[in-house]
Image 1 (tube, one colour):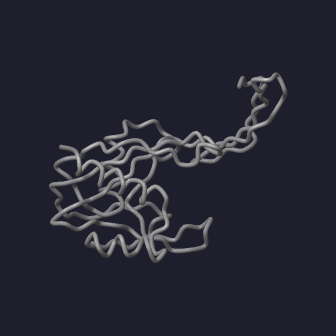
Image 2: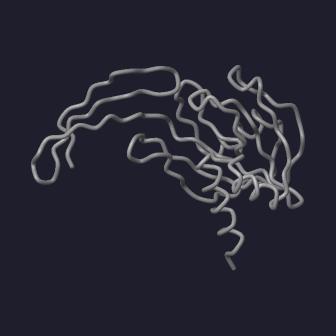
Length: 177
């Protein structure tokens, strides 16, 4: 597939939306609407068999959701993903980690957005003050053991696809020899 033209139709500090005209492999024309967002980091804080999650109101869903700390840099800045992971952990939970282990890449919604993410395991944790952004002021944070977290997935208390996929990456990492 080949892009024949593109135009930006919307922009804000978190994303841009563009419309691309394309030519398919058979030569026929088509159109794609693409949401461009910077890559994000997702962090699984893990200590003594417990996982640290945050709960916040997700405006597009109109719901509060539990998930792992995650996010992008302000104003669509391009920040090294390991640095972004440390920033998101500190910002949302107040935790600092001695070690970040890269668990792998996650594609958010590849039919809609160019955004990709990296999942990290954070260990050697110490507590501190969080540094939340204005949109995160109602955020809560709590520790959960694995059985409770998996029950939350089964019952729909955790529905964030990135958090669930990152947890699978953690489980696969733990199975490596």
